[in-house]
Image (cartoon, rainbow, N blue to C red; front, side):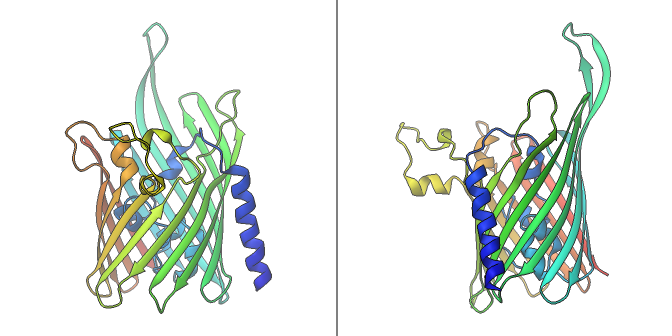
Length: 325
């Protein structure tokens, strides 16, 4: 058992050493949320331990907590009338391992094409597809690991690309203390077929996450630190020109979420994503980066919905439904 833990940790940190310095990337749709609960908690969560298969999409190590034979379907509206649809299914193998498959399709709609002389060339479509095979293993009583292999393809007008990627995840969960901590390395890999002659990188993302529930209150708080391999300096200066200290820099990589647990089967969530609030905000906009949602469990059925304020003129809705067969 200890050997499995050491091998898994070695794989994660060796991958981090190779990929942590990468920056420019394609396939940024991979950053979109899959889980309505994660979306409601700021757009991402890698440490929430629940019987929710969609959370395993964000961290494959969390699949170990999901009931056998669970099917999930989801649908999301996004910026500029884009639509996202996905599906996921898992299977338990023995007492310590779980496998799953998932797929996601992003449709950006139809566009009018023009050449360099502003002559119409007809309409065209743009789309992204991701297919995942996931596996999670209970390394110890409190530590689980997970890995996802994925096939990615995009087609924009006459340009297309294909890539292969890997996600790695760890989760530590102390049930007695209601505390969970996770670490993930997402989107390791590269293009098999480039859009043109230049090969580009996947949006590699190093993340840390923590979730804590209060012992005597129906509240649970989460913090997810994302994009830790990219310290973008433009966010680390104040209005007076002074540079942020380390704690201020870390805050700007943080996603904050809170759950209000109204009984065993109903949860209301609220979140805030600093990076979205900065990248998409405009003058006069007050609510960019704010997210909210709710989850309801009725026997074998679990329902989730979230709302994300992305921009003064745009928002996103994400709906999940899961059924344990």
